[in-house]
Length: 212
Image (cartoon, rainbow, N blue to C red):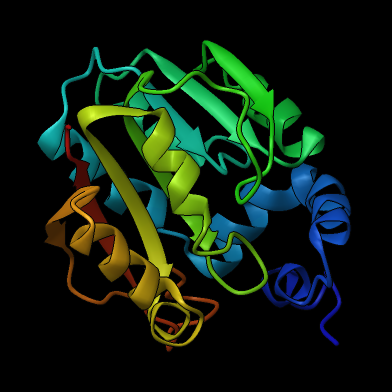
């Protein structure tokens, strides 16, 4: 089993449940930015933020679902977005995100569970690095759709192997077939961790929630 000091990414992937996942992120929070950016070359926050900015305006009310330490929020803030809410299962990660002073609200919640937000409240949701091994399940999309306004956007990254093998492909197709959302764009495959895991590929998916 990977240890945090040798490979923190594999270490969190190997979490047995959300309790252990939360504990590991709490422990990793202070070193997270340094480890991911310096040692792994983490590019997904900027890549996903570019896609969100393509379809929404900076005054949009945006939920950063699985915000971690706020790297996605930082990328969006640089593009003029200033109405951001952070949501994450880890209190330690949210405390690190709070220090960046880019979120209007920070909430400790878990993707895949019921979210304590009203329906149809966010103009857009962005979720980066959460649709991956040992993290959010395909059913997470149900709540993300519920809390997104009609014709709002849901932008997320997902590992290619997780998309194909862990039920995401079927779930995304099912939601589309029931006219709950429509696929707007999907990026080319890219390595979001080009230094640490150059062979692991992700894509950015952009969906628009459909109205009644």
